[in-house]
Length: 141
Figure 1 (cartoon, rainbow, N blue to C red):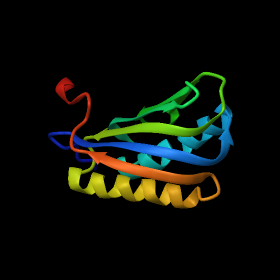
Figure 2: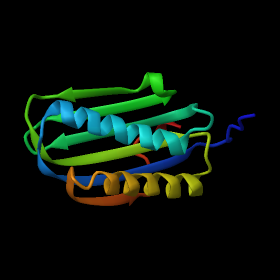
Figure 3: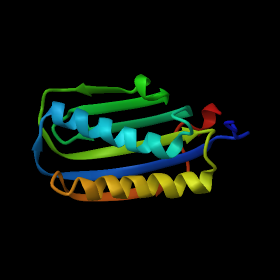
């Protein structure tokens, strides 16, 4: 039986991505879809997420990508804005879950991001990850 925590666990981070070559919007959409699925694996239980995963990105050419997942995988949405190709993105990652304790969530999500970057060696040239102490929408709780 699933146990829901009394308070949400929160993971918030900022990531800078430099790709090995310029990527079009379809490639970036698939890249972020895969990243969200990896984060879902470590922040959900029995393929259910009480909370959300949100990823926001902005590119140097003005394009943006938004990815959101709440509940289960069929609710995954990835939206691109702009037709430009991008080689550098600034990315904000927010995971809120009532399913995993915060100290575990921090470790699991960080490990999932590192593994995703490692698995994407041919795609990602450089990246930086900065974990935040709070979620931008913290006051909403």
